Image 1 (cartoon, rainbow, N blue to C red):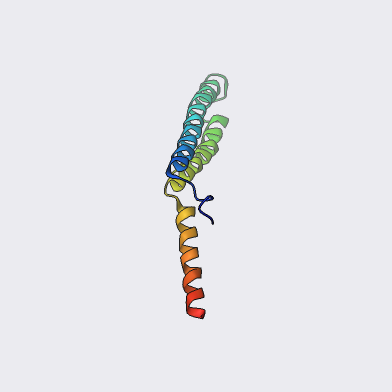
Image 2 (cartoon, rainbow, N blue to C red):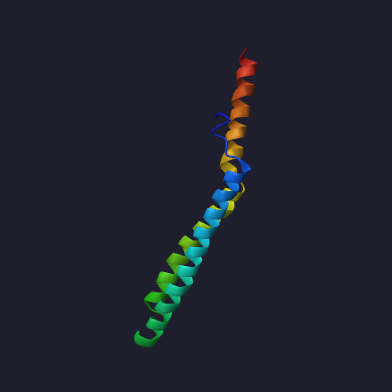
Length: 97
């Protein structure tokens, strides 16, 4: 990885803000659409919980993974691991000489 490939703090902040915006849109759409499904299911559907429950459950899991991806990316795991692997390779190369 060369210095021109290394993202600047500004680039990282921009990327994180973009991911947050995507996550917030996902949450908003989730709430609005699922509220509509629940109203529809409870007013038109048969007794008990029907299909709205399953849509909310599986979409909620997808939303949880989206939130987790936002959280993990914010910790810059990929950048840290790449630096660790590079340092390990350099140590191994130095000891083999």
